[in-house]
Figure 1 (cartoon, rainbow, N blue to C red):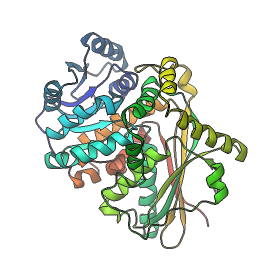
Figure 2 (figure 1 turned 60 degrees about the vertical axis):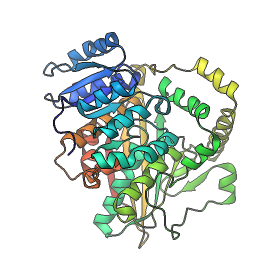
Figure 3 (figure 1 turned 30 degrees about the horizontal axis):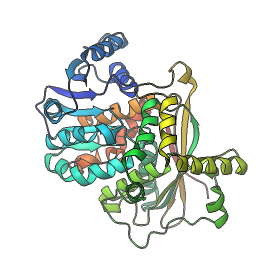
Length: 416
C-alpha cells in the first residue's frame, strides 16, 4: 500500500461544514480509538470549535490534531504528504475539489469524497486517473448518498447471483422507495452552480450511462425498452418494485454503477450484458406523472440564470442544513432487482437507513476510509492498485461495515 510512513492515517478536510461535522462526529464515536487523525480547513478558530464539540462523544479517544490549509497547491500538497488518506467534504467540488484531487493523486494519498457532480468526476478521471494509478492512490468520489446505495446494491446483487447461479447479470433496476429528508445548503449550491459552470454539451456528454466507464459496452448490450406511453408520461410499473417515475439521483448513480462494471474485470464480473437503471417509487400513476413533469420543468427552469440567482437567495446556504433533531425521523430506502443473464432468474436486495441522509453520508465516507486503511478482507480496489475508483470496488468489507453502522441490507433470490 502507498504512503506507509505518514504523520496521520486520516485527515478530514472541510470538517467545519455541515456534512464535515457529521463525519467528524461519526469518526469520534465509532472508529478505532488508536486512529491517528486530524481535522483540516482554512479557519483555526472554527476547527477548534469542532474539536471541542466532539471531545465528549468518546472519552477514550485522543482529540484530533488541527491542520490549517488554504485551497492552494502549496498547502494542499503539504497536507496530502502528511496523511495516508484524505476525506474531503469541501464542495461544490467542481469549484473547490480539483486541487485537492490533484494533490492526493500526485502524492500517493488515498482519497474519499461525497460529491454527486458527475461532470466534475468525468473531468478528474480524464486528468488524474493515470496519475493515481502510478502512485497507488485509491481515490473514490461519489461515496456518500450518491452513489453508495446504488453501487453497493448492484455489487451485492451481482455477487449473490454469481454465488448462486454462477453467471452474470443482464439487467439491474434500482428504485428509491422512500426519501424523507431535506437538502442541505451544500447540495443546493452544487445543483445551482453546476449549470453556471458547465455548458449543456458537457453536461450531456458526461451524464451518459457509460461515460465514466473505462470499458466500452459491447454492442450486444440491450438497453431496457420503454413503451411510448411510459416515455411520454414518465411512469412505468415493474413487478415487485411498484409504480415508478424519475429518480433525482438516477443519472448520477447510473454513471458510477457502470464505471464499477467496467473497473471490475472489465465487465466480466457483472456480465457483458449488464445494464443499470434507477427510478423512484410513486404512490400511483397520477402522482408519478406529476413528479415526472415537475422534475422536467424544474430542470428546464434552471437553464435560466435569473431563476438560479433567485433560488440561491432563498435556500439553505453552504455550510447549513436541516436541523438534526427534526431529521431524526428521516428515512431513506432502496430496493433493487437483478436478472440473471442466462436463465432470467431474479434476485432482490434492499438498503435502508433510518435517519438523516447526511448522517448516512458521513458514515459512508468514514467507513470507506477504514476499508482502505485497515480492512483485512478482500478489497477489489487493492487488486486494481490505484486510480479513481468507485464505492463498489471496496467490496464485501464495505458492505459489512455499513451494516455494522446502522444500514439495513438484505439480499435473496426471488421465487419465480
